[in-house]
Length: 165
Picture (cartoon, rainbow, N blue to C red):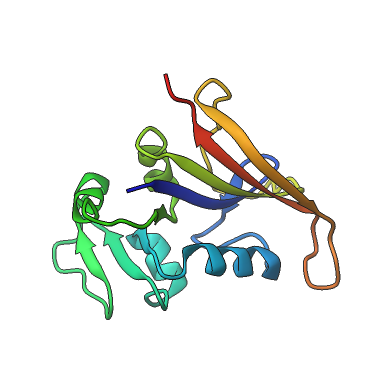
C-alpha cells in the first residue's frame, strides 16, 4: 500500500480559512478528482463537513473523536492510525486529503506528497500545511501552469517522494 498526501497550498503554505478553501481553481479540482478517483481518501471531520458529502467513486474514511458521528457513504474511525489500519489490505494508493491536523500527523507516515502550489500569498489564512523538509522529501516531478480565465493564479503540480534512509 502506498500512502500519499494530496493538498493545495499557497506560497506561504496557507490551505484555508474558516474551514473553507481560499481560492477556486478548477484545474486543481480536476487534478484532485483524476488522482483520487477509485482510491480510498482519508480526511478529518471538519474537512468532510466542508465538502458536505462523501466524495463519489472513492472509499471515504473520516477521522473524528465525536462518538456518534455518522454520514452517508463514509466509514468513521477515531484516529489516523485506525484509518491506516483499515486500509492495510489495499493494493491501491490511498490518499490523505486533510485537514491541517491530519496532514501534520501524516507527514511521517506517508510515501508521497502531491502538492498543488498556488502562486500567491494569502495573509488572512488560519490553516496551513506543514513545511516540506528537503532532507525528508525528494522532488520527483513538477509541472508549471499560468493563470487563465478559469484559474486566477499561476500554479504548479509537484510530486514528492519520501527519502529512503
